[in-house]
Image 1 (tube, rainbow, N blue to C red):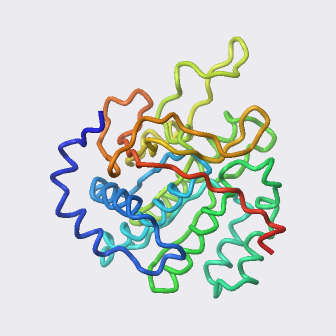
Image 2: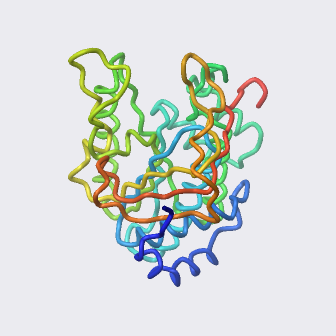
Image 3: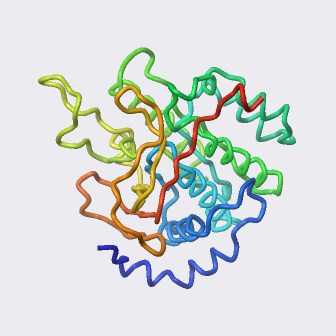
Length: 296
């Protein structure tokens, strides 16, 4: 069931080299399985400028994966025109100035407090989805540290919100922000971390919670189907993630598909969701939301 695609094995040498080049300046070292997974994705995406990681919000592993992949992508591009890498996050665009200030700061307690002082983070944990997690805060800290070590990294908060509308308004607006960023820096590499529904190139044929006559929302990446990129569906064989369901925001278990010894990556050109590749991690662990009061 967990057979690796034969293309992965042709990349073993490149993966080994990438693993040896991982940065040592991350705020919290990523688990070895996450480092290995990042190397597999980097090797498999060596020809793509844009990599989209479709995650389940509210885990430690997906943000850590994005941080490791950003570092590897910078090393792949180092010395080439437009060698920098932009990490695009599903964070409200009103947080961009605070993120930029934090990335240029010393990273001390005052800078961290300023980063989480905006309305985006000021949501009680019992009402917060997984995007505002402690793992996302750790990801921003790791990017700041990599920048201070000389890596040309940026962060883009690409969620402009729905303006009072629904997903059919928000999704194309997010796609438009990304399209403009891709066009503005045509040589720059991008790692996009976004919810797994948004990473689809096609909507599902059925989805719960719709009224009669309604259709599933068109995913964000479906509005960018003409843009060359690698869309990776990031899942786990077991574990849990923080999410809001049935009026309750808490850790929720995944379907247990059995233990696997390490991450599995393969291309999936026939995926009905339109994702280009599948990455299965051994386990997800739930990341709690940032509690602004306790952080301070």
